[in-house]
Every structure is written in structure tokens, then in C-alpha cells.
Image: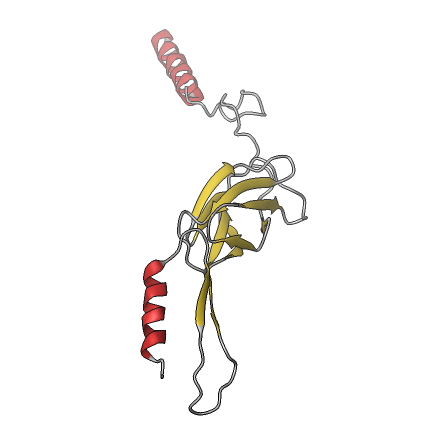
Length: 189
């Protein structure tokens, strides 16, 4: 009988010890942690709006003066959000990201240049944080071509015309040459 009690008590103790387990999901750990690990820091407010601004709406095609791009990140309550990564892209030109993470004012910064392309065009700069994005457009201008001469003439009258180029530093000579060939080809003496 004594052996039977000993076996029963030993079996009961073995079941109790096995039931306690040894995993990290202990019910006796600190209530502020899960199984003794440190909880992740709070993610902070989510970005719901990105306002993208350009220091000027136009950039000269010679690329001498870049445009400063500013992005303000705000949450659903319009409070500025700090510490968020902002990805910048541009449809053409060149971007230099000077501050990719928003500061305490919710501000991230980049600089836009023409990257040596003198053509007149519109550059779209896009800023993205997660699934939220914002855009701003910057026009590239500076290359101009004008034709000077009489506004009107009587049939049979001759007139002189001059083609004046007020082009930016990087001149697209081929397009100018083609224009002159077309212009001279349509000339009637």
C-alpha cells in the first residue's frame, strides 16, 4: 500500500511540474511585458497628409539656381509628425535629399536642379511616406526664340526678318538649326 501511495504522489508531482512548463508565456512575469521581453516602442501618430512646397514655381533651364523642396507631414488632427521617413522622386531633373526624416516641425527637405537638361518642361516632385503622397510641379523655362520683322506687308512687298535667340546657357543648337532651315525654306522673295 505504501508503494501505491508513493507512486500516486510521485505521478501527481510529475504532472504538476510538467504543467508549469518552461516557456516564455509565464503567468508570473511582469504584467508590462510578454514573457519577459521588452515591448516595442509606440509607432507614434500616422502620417495622413503630406504638403509639398517649392521655393519657386519656375526654375531656369541653365540650372544656375536650384529649387528648394519642403515637405510637411501632418497627422489626422493636422499636428506635425516628427521622425517619419520621406521618399522623394522627380519626373526629370535631379534631386538631392538634404533631410529625409521629418524634424520636430514635421519638415523634410530636398533640392531640385535641371541636371543639365535645358529643355522647357514641367517637373513633378513626389514625396511619399507609407501610402500617403503629395506632389508639386516646377516649370523649367528660359529658352526663348523670337522672330522680329514687319507685322504686315502688302502683296509683292519685301521685308526683312531676324531670328533672335535669348537662350539659356545650354543651347539646343540642333532644334535652332532645324527651325532656321524650315523658316528659310518657307521664305518668299
